[in-house]
Image (cartoon, rainbow, N blue to C red):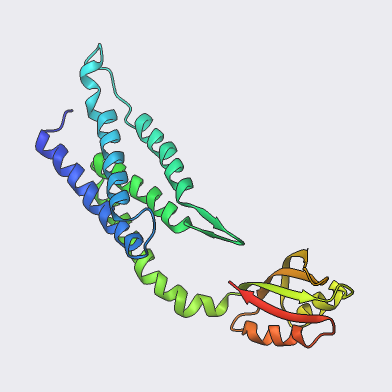
Length: 225
């Protein structure tokens, strides 16, 4: 069954509008994939799906031959993976862009659902995504970060003869978890010990820095996220 041109246009416009709602949060967060990217992803997913469902019927030899729109929709899922991978950035020990990549993936699903006329699913998913991006962000900042261990990078300048076990034992006695250790030799003959640490919830990295500075053989301690 072919759709009227007006219905096709309405579906494309709805897909773009719902994609804009999801992309607005990423735009406000100053992410590379922002409002326009999410709108284009939703529009593209909708058009690919509409093309697979209704646009190829005139090319079939037998008008009664069924058309499987899921074949094109499946390729939309594959293609969106490349955009999502481009939005993910690794910075040191942290990874950024996972939320943006997930937003692009959801936006493509919304566009596909609208194109197939599954408006209830598209609206429910859009509403849930908006709540997750806006409301849950505040919950994460106010509550979850107080309950989760803090990840910090400590740069400890030490004398060459210091034993690493003195550092790690001190940290572990105070419930800090050492995730990784890297050592570099300084120009003054000492060593920079770079540690990725998971500190207990609500702990102050300044306290751990003062604790490490009090050890024999430690010259200075700096830390960062």
